[in-house]
Image (cartoon, rainbow, N blue to C red; front, top):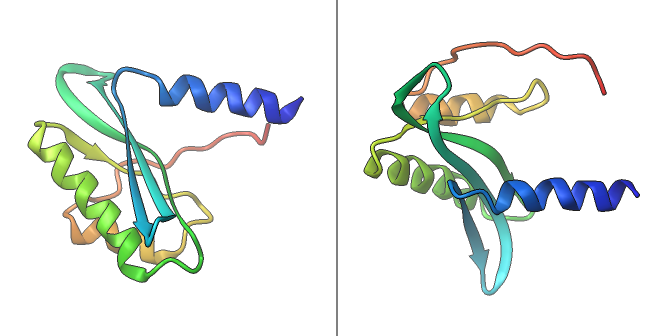
Length: 116
């Protein structure tokens, strides 16, 4: 089934050696998560990157939850000597781009794909 295939794909990514998942909780409820994959940069293996895999927050999560996840992820990446690479989907709100800019990130590419 589609659910089984998605679960398998997610499980593979979450168990990769370089995967790190940060969790935000409020009174025991998970209200946000941010996953990164630490790996050598494709075109220069001397550079370690922290590639954002996903960043999600509940609609009812406190505003600071999503912001704190990003802040922590960037701090952890820099502490490991990694260059943070974060993504903004075409459907992402403008606030995502503003959040990245606050951490000194600049757009580096636009990716095009056919719908699967």
